[in-house]
Image 1 (cartoon, rainbow, N blue to C red):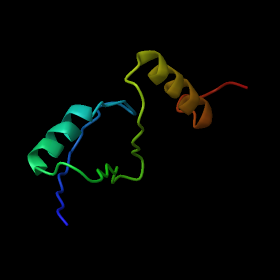
Image 2 (cartoon, rainbow, N blue to C red):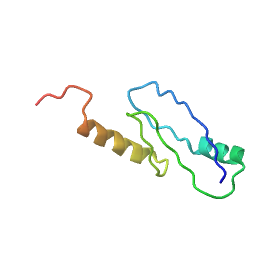
Image 3 (tube, one colour):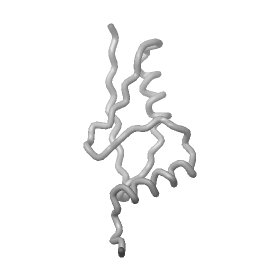
Length: 78
């Protein structure tokens, strides 16, 4: 069985952000020379996550609002 591993290091300069890594994953697949099988993409940091969806700005905005409601960063007066 063939395998290939590539690490991507990302620096997000703000508290959170969305980074489209699709071109990087496609490049790694080409580099591997593997033509069929499974591709595992794993975020190795406890506060990072990977999601598969369209790169749609409206969707990203919805995620930001949801995350702020779930775990607020700014002080909230109540």
